[in-house]
Length: 440
Image 1 (cartoon, rainbow, N blue to C red):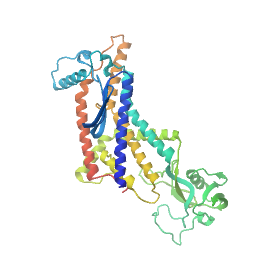
Image 2 (image 1 turned 135 degrees about the vertical axis):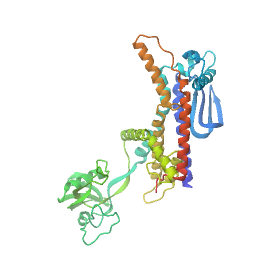
Image 3 (image 1 turned 45 degrees about the horizontal axis):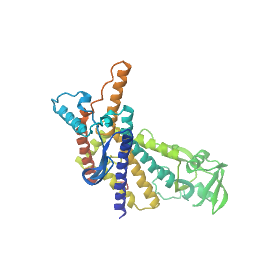
Image 4 (image 1 turned 90 degrees about the vertical axis):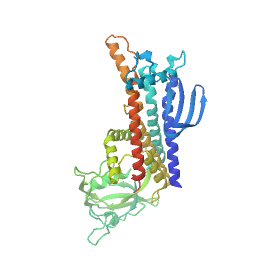
């Protein structure tokens, strides 16, 4: 049941993201005077619609996108001085111009989208992707500011009995040859919260780890809170070979992928995890980092799709970092909602779900900015080209050029749409028959 609920939540948030994306286009378009004849969530047959003012609002059967119909999207034949079409490409462009022109009511040519200035066109076309980025930021803020994310605390969860080699298996048992851990010898107990170490107040686990590592084998004082009372202890770490970690607490590796190690002070305590809240500023930085990582993924998308084709043909197991489609993301939602295990709570499930949905919106933001029609980035590129031509003409003292004939890009849009549909079907097939799983 939890799995089904997770999938339903994913579908609802996806539809909400699509709806708000289209609102991001519709609102500025209306404010700039463009007539918006339709606002639709989904494709295919209309399930429900209502007309309010001059706009028809509705929901369609296939929840894989949405659109707003901006009247006069393409310049008229008169505006671009189009000639009689001779080739298939020109006929497709001419048909697109004619259909667009038919939607312009008599006396309302000034309300056509193609009449907008370049800055206004950019605001309209960037409004949708920007809305997705805002949604991602809000979802991440709910998780990182409102709920918190699991992180190592200064509370001791366990005190191992002995010091084992750094390359030993995690489940290796102690032997008579293994020395006891300094923490055990000093009397540290699970549940103790470290307050100070060697005279320095301890704020977080990363700071405490750095202090212990820098101590070497020197004897220092340590203050812990135990059952509401501060207890003074004396600890003498040992020098042991341990993995090198960066400022974020992540283990560093060398060029060959092997874990880097160093001789550092070692005490022998394991931290308890707790939900830690972050600031709004940190969420902003996190959103930018996630966006950049998504840009890197989109930039390598052709090779990643090639890998999926290979695994689909050969039956090889897909890599955990493989690109997934809507089916795969829906599967992730179900798995996150139904996962069980130690430390898994409703709060952590909710946080995992919102994190995933935030990344989905980041992906929608980045992918929609790809400069190819029919994506928003294609319209942005066309508007920039039109604005650039006008600026060049102004600087050279030439007459202002007419609008860029974006209808000529319609055949390209058809080709890109077919390509995207094919990729979507490939991802759906792979996600069903060779899925990437979040939890094993």
